[in-house]
Amino acid sequence: MANMSLTKNPMPSQDPNVRNKNFDEVALGYTEEQALDEAQRCLNCKNKPCMTGCPVMVHIPEFIAEVAKGDFEAAYQIISNTSALPAVCGRVCPQESQCEKYCVRGKKGDPVGIGRLERFVADWHNAHCTEAPAKPASNGHRVAVVGSGPSGLTCAGDLARKGYEVTVFEALHLAGGVLVYGIPEFRLPKSIVQKEVDGLKALGVTIATDTVVGRTITVDELMEEQGFEAVFIGSGAGLPMFMNIPGVNYKGVLSANEFLTRINLMKAYKPDSDTPIIHPKKVAVVGGGNVAMDAARCAKRLGAEVYIVYRRGMEELPARKEEVEHAEEEGIIFKTLCNPVEILADENDDCKGIRCIKMELGEPDASGRRRPIEVPGSEFELDVDCVIMALGTSPNPLIKSTTKGLEINKKGGIVVNEDGLTSKENVYAGGDAVTGAATVILAMGAGKTAAKAIDEQLSK
Image 1 (cartoon, rainbow, N blue to C red):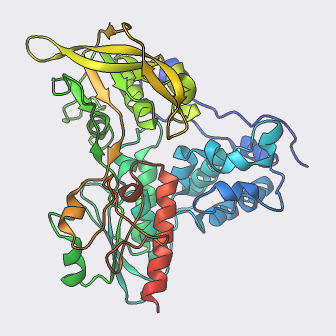
Image 2: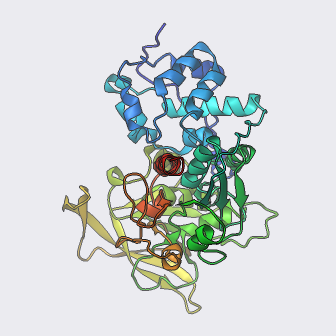
Image 3: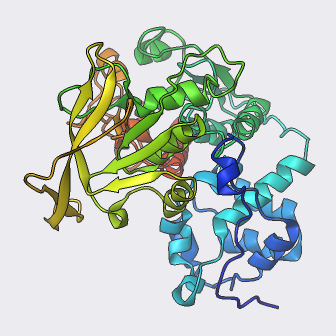
């Protein structure tokens, strides 16, 4: 019998005043009873509107129907037919602006908790099924993947399942890309990412870490000397942006990329870690996206008083609503409608504050959001000893500068067609290396698109 409740089952989570002092996962996941109850809210619509919002086209009503029947493994197999990273997507995808946005139940109440159910199913599978996937027979074709983030892992997995011999080249010492260096443990436990990587290895994917394509080896050399028939570039967007204001070079001013990499990849948050990390007393995080929320919440867990400084209002914050709510619950202070104009320092060039100016919202700009306008004479100072810039990232120029015939747009992204093919024959690209910083699921969709195109090209 359908569950016609207007509200979705709440996600169990740690108490805010407990979790803001540890790095354990905040959301605890549904119980079997909660998952069954939530699945019964799905109407199994004939035209499946929820699927139109999913970049990897998960068969959402079908997997939820299996959950409602209690066949969680069947549900997992349906999801994994199109998604390479179910446990990841269930945690970090912005479902509220994708699949759940189109859920019919959302018209007169909450949409079905699609993301929460996906997480439940993936976690159930990982807890109960230990058998590694069988390695497909080789089809004799070799493909190189540059970068082991969500687009690279998705492309590698889709090709490996078709029998391709795939090697993934990763610049860092651990595979996972932004999933391991960017997203904190309390949102995405790294053991989950490692399990997904191990599943790809079982399919025959080779992971070559500590390999900086563009330095260790170039894209051209991969094809001309190593014999790879196609290359997929999924190298992400790891080049941080800073504001052009006085004081950005003072000690105590750093990018969110560096701060999060030290914490997440290099485990600086652990008491026995050898990785140096700044332990400020008061922090200003500049920006309003998910990365800003991650940096702020990490700083809070290191014991700091934390401000989010954002030039628009709360309604315009680009971060996921859930992440903003979690940050507020954990004691992050939001200084909205404010913009930094100068970073202050003492005689030793150590950060001692940030000067801001108040803003008001004017007419909409090209992005459709109301343009922030400075309020004359409204400057004020925040007493902080650390400023973390979370203003976005752009693709690293290394690959474009070392690859012949690769067309780049004015923002530094690789130019591709609808199949992910670049201006260079048999070289494909996707994810943040093309679009600039975006979501995990969009990067996965690009990797899936490119894998399909590579297969069609090489299997002719």
